Amino acid sequence: MPTPYFGWTGKVLRIDLSSREATLISPEIEVYRAVLGGKGLAGHHLRPFANKNWDDPELPLCLFTGPLTGTLSPTSGRMTIMSRSPLTGTIGDASVGGGLGTRMKQAGLDGLVITGKSAAQKGIEIVDGRVQFCDAGALTGMGVHQLASRLAGKGSFAAIGPAAENRVAFANIMVDEHFAAGRGGLGLIFAAKNLKYLTIKGSGRVAVHDPKALGAAREDILRLTMASPVLSGEHGFSCYGTGSLYDLMDSRRMMPTDNFRKTHFDQASSLNAFAFKEKYLPRKTGCKGCHILCKKITRGGVVMPEYETMSHFTALCGNTDLDTVVAANALCNDLGMDTISAASTLACHAEISGERLSKETILALIKAIGRGENPELAQGAAQYAKGRNHGEAAMSVKGLELPAYDPRGAYGMSLAYATSTRGGCHLRAYPISHEILRKPVATDRFTYSGKARIVKIAEDVNAVIDSLTACKFIFLAAGLEEYAKAFSAVTGLPYGAQDLLECGERIYYNERIMNAVNGFCDRDDDLPARFFIEDGSHGEGIEIRALPREEFLAARAAYYRIRGLSPQGLPLAEKAKELGLTWNG
Image 1 (tube, rainbow, N blue to C red):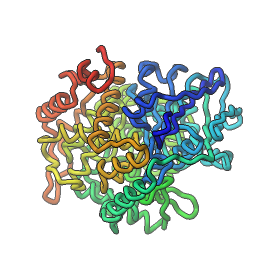
Image 2: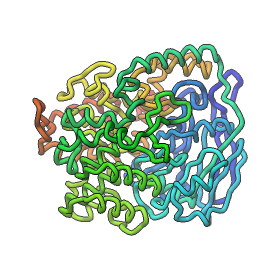
Image 3: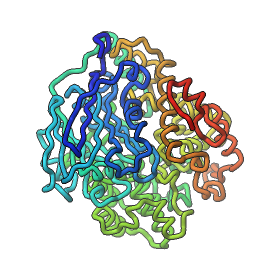
C-alpha cells in the first residue's frame, strides 16, 4: 500500500482450508478507491466465484473491515461477512458488530478470504497476522455460549453452533457470543468448510491521516446523535434498544401478526420494550467503539431481544409471554440460527398445520430445528411451504423470510423488499426512516410516488455505510456529508458525499450482477401474493389496504430505469462499464 494512504492496512489474508495454507495479498489501491472496504471489498473478492454452489470448496467466505474500522469514527466497530446464501441462492452478507472487525484491523488485516474444506473440523486462530490451524473435533455439537468460554483469551471470535452443523438453512455465524451475522444461512458456509470457529487478536493500531480532522468529524456526528430523538431520546434506541419501535409499528398498523394475516396485535402494549425493561432490568452494552449502546443485557448475562425478534416471537407467532421471547432468543443464539427466519418458519408452519403455537411448542420446535431433529422446518419457510403444497403461506422474498414491517403500511418498504439483493430485507434500503420515523424528511407512506428513486439512493447509501464501515442507525442522525469528512480524515482521500455515493452505486450494481449470474431477474423482485389481495388490520383512523399491484409494478419499472437495469431487472453492459464493472449478459 503506498504510504500516502491510511485507514486500510493494504493486506488481505487468503486461507485455504484444504491445503492449510495462508497467503497475504495486497489489493491495488484503485480497488480500495472504487469499493472502499467492508461490503465493497467482500463483493469484489466474491464476484469471480459467485456462481459456485454454497457447499463448493472453491466458494470463498469473505470477511472484511472498512477504512473506518478500528478508528475513533463513531459506530465503526463493524465488518461484513459475505458469500453465496445457502437459503436463497442470492449473494448473502451481513454487517455484524462486536469486536471482530476492530481486532482484525489490529492484527494488520483488512480482510480474510477463506476457501477450501478441511478434512476434519478445525478452528483458525490469528494473532497479528500469523495463522494457526487447530483441531476442533472435540467442539462438535457445542453451543455458542459454552464455546465462548472455551475461546476466552483468544481475542474476538466468529463461530457456529449446532444449527449449522445440522444443516439448518438459516444458520448464523455468531460473533463474540451475542452478535449475529444473520440472514441467509452464512453459518452453513462455515460448516461446509469444516470450520467451527475463527479467533483474531492483534497489537497494531490503525494509521489515521489527520487525527485532528477526524476528531472534528467525530464531534459533529456525536452532536447530531445526541440531538436525535430516535437514537438518544427518552424512548429511543439508547434507552430501550431497537424494541422502542414495537409500539410505533403496532400503532401504525404495521405489526406482522399471525403470519402477516393481520397487521395489529391486540396484546402489543403489554409486550413492548418498556415491559422488557421493567421486568428484566437490563443494562446498556453494544459494539466496540459505539456510543449509542442499543444492545441490552441483564447483569446475569441474558441478552434482550431486538425489535425483529420481539415482534416475530410475539405477534407473528401469536405468543403473549415475555419469558418465551427471551428464551427463544437465547436458544437461537446458542444454537446459532436466525431469529427472524426461525420465527417466520414457525408462523408459516402454524398457518399450514392449523396448530396454535403455545410457548412450550415454540421452544420445543426451535430446539428440534437446531439439533437436527426437524429437517423439514430447517429448510426455512419457503421450502417448507413448497413441500407442503402451500407456497402462499411463506412470507418471503427470494426465499428470505420478511422482517417485522408489513409492507402494506409503507409502500416504499414494499419496493425495498422486492429489489433487495439478498431477499426479504429491511437493511438494503430502509424507507421506514422517512415513511414512519420522518427522517430526514417525511414522505407519504401510502404512495409509490418518488419511492423508486428514494429506494435506489438508500440502497447506495447503505452500501457505503457497510463498506466504510459504520452502523446504519447513526444515519438516522448524521449523513454522508459527515461521514465523508471522517473518511477523508482517516484515509487522506478528498472524497465528498457524492464520491461516496458513486462508490455505493458501484457496489450495489455488482451485487445485481452476481445475482443475475445465478438467474435472478424481475420475476424474483416481487412480493408474496397475500399483500396484493388481502387487506391488513384497520383501526384508529388508519386503513391498511392491499397493495395496488399495477402501481407496484410501475414503481418497480421506474426503479429499474433509475438503477440502469433492463425491463427484466438485469444489468446492462453499458451501465456496468460506466461504473467500472464488467457484464456481458
